[in-house]
Length: 335
Ligand code: NAD
Ligand code: UD1
Image (cartoon, rainbow, N blue to C red; front, side):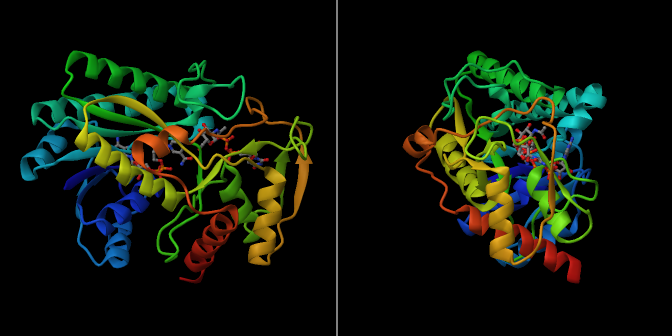
């Protein structure tokens, strides 16, 4: 099958391209390199020993999308392209609504025009807002979201549901990711933000690497086993494999369905810090600070639906996530 991957040079997109190629698919990438580098394409090719067609372009630009669809017979699309920084979305809501919504609308328009109606969309556990209980099931109430980034995901889910109502030939999987971390075990692709990271694992890595002095643990007075926030961390390679199964599902059926992609296990901030230190034999100094506004105590997925309907479940544990996150950054540092 020939799969168009928007945002394919990004963190999750690049790992997904590897898994798609490993399974014998052809891959076409469109990315405007807003948050990634072009050399990721060569890294994907180096890992898989297969070639990839890359278009540097913006998904809001219908003309570029039309060019891709007229150059290739695309069987299905995975739509990763978008902005994802929660804090920045509060500062720049228009930029977030414009990019995340317009890229999706342009994509759907061009897909419909070329008769390709198989779509896998990158949503987020953030659409559940503050859940009443854990584990979180897909039929839990959605929202209210706490920031414009999360609202774009909720709005896009609704837009895609409306698209299906208008034309039942569409087949759409809404994948709600929990907390993706780690990197490919080749050490060639991974996540290494240039700015000060907002998320836990990239921050830990920078402290371990002595680029930042200390990890700030946001609160130790939550109702959890050690008082720090609990999340469902998932290895990015497991997450990528979930996309391969989701593509198979949308190719086979029609409809619109949401799936949690998580492990179903919750780990606290201190569980992650201690595991990272132990498996990598490095120090991660930390101090406890007040809670971060908007954070919830505990968030982890029910994974039953993804197992039943996609035939997918995560395999890798926290130790592997911590090892792979560190080996990618140590390798980048050596280059
Ligand atoms: P990323 O920033 O690494 O990748 C996104 C890619 O999209 C980047 O390469 C960027 O250059 C590209 N892009 C952005 N806007 C574009 C546009 N208009 N046209 C073309 N390319 C564009 O992010 P990621 O972590 O790989 O996330 C991928 C998707 O998954 C995003 O939609 C994100 O919101 C969603 N998601 C991520 C997480 C997470 O924790 N990483 C969690 C839940 C959902
Ligand atoms: C983040 C996003 C959310 C997205 C989710 C999955 C934010 C505010 N929210 O949520 O929209 O759906 O990732 O990708 O970015 N922590 C610290 N110190 C730090 C960083 C984090 O103690 O420097 C703690 C947090 O309080 C939380 C846990 O670590 O308990 C995980 O935080 P983070 O990695 O930011 O992810 P989420 O808050 O789950």
